[in-house]
Length: 476
Image 1: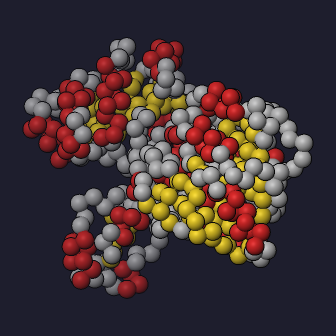
Image 2: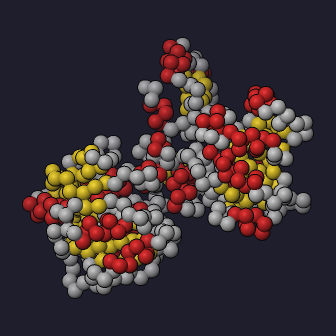
Image 3: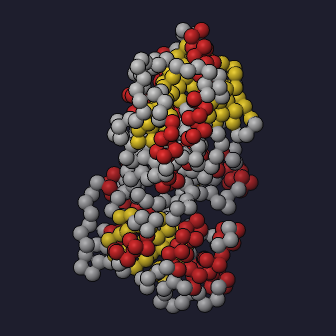
């Protein structure tokens, strides 16, 4: 396991239960979690804490507990993901029974005793699960509806199976990651007693992954600082294989700087079809990225999975900008980026600043950032609009913002030309004689009544990756 040496004294004999505690950015939670293990009525356990590269003071929070010989702690230098952390902990575990306690959850006093008693009375069982309290006062005797069995609920007999790791797949579906592998070894049985809590808070891992909860591939990448392409499939969205999708771009060498090539600092986020910015790099310009921290699943930020863009740190971005001395700042694209881009504009050290906005302006009004959006359309050196209609709207709303020679019209989500160099597929209408049309991007403004009207006229709607299943299923 790529980690600092495990700390804490070593017990004289093997325990009956190894409790695995993966942790990341949970310094505020972890003391309560550890205390709940210390309070167990069944004392024959070891606790293996794997700090998955936390940038907070988790080590300090854990230190007072390491005098207990049953508790061990290790820290990875960089975050490797849940599967990697758990596989590392499994490699260190000494007990025949494995339990789990994420550092933001907690046990009740009889939790381990109930689980081990259930397994002792059911030799045919591979896994025992407890009832769980969740979302405040709600509870479930087994799987939480819509969420499945959680780590905190489970104890299982040790097997040779491994957790699916980040390089294989990122998912919030624990059944795909591990539970399904254990079913080959025996039954899953419940204690029918509520003995643990799945703690509800905004930064839970499944919320960072699921698109309808504000998560998704881009929030996940940003939170865990993932620098490589991902195979990603949340339980609520469509699968996306960045490894295959971006291979042609990532594996080619950087384009040598052209004579007169610019250093372009991209500020904000890139939304859909983000690889389009490589058209600039392929012309010999050097690209840097300074990404907004407030993102949704469709806000593409770095580290970019197709490479060829050097990220600047958010924490000391002003110093980094002074160091690279960009020739131009190209700020873009969705409403979520407006506050951060506006902050960069306010501290701009005199670099020519281009603002490219593709979003409906009402989002900024709703979220209280309309004054910042006005500034971006009036104080920047040039502006890019996503359509002539958007340009005209802003000229009506902010008279004088559209100036000759300082504005362009360019769809901010245009796919890169590379995708259209292959042989064109046959028209679908040639097979069935009925019209087919594509909804590109999210189906905003396309309501269920209109979809039904089109269906009645035998018009077929097709959606591609940007529309996740939750939005489409709402119409069914």
